[in-house]
Length: 91
Image 1: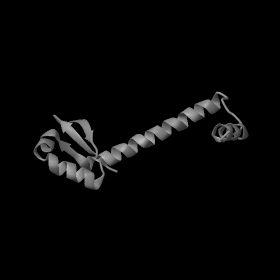
Image 2: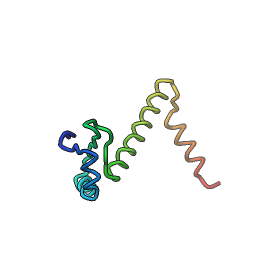
Image 3: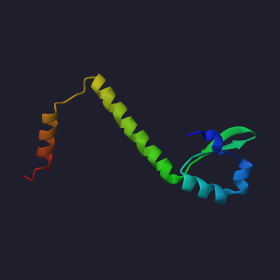
Image 4: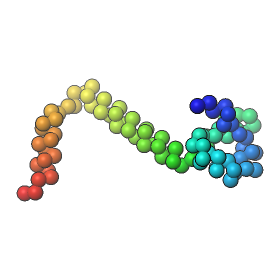
């Protein structure tokens, strides 16, 4: 995606806030907001933001798992399954 097509000034945002929100919600593409000719913020619809946060959380879990593997913090699957079954079996 090219962000250069989605660049608007803060003045434009102030004058057209409802239209801008409708556009980013419909298109699901972020908009770069400039102030004095410099990029200052990115405006994004809530659904896209939530998806991004979920993706980042999953990536963090993968990194943590990779770090555990590198540190040798591994357990055999059979041991984990047995522990989970014991924990959830009614006694």
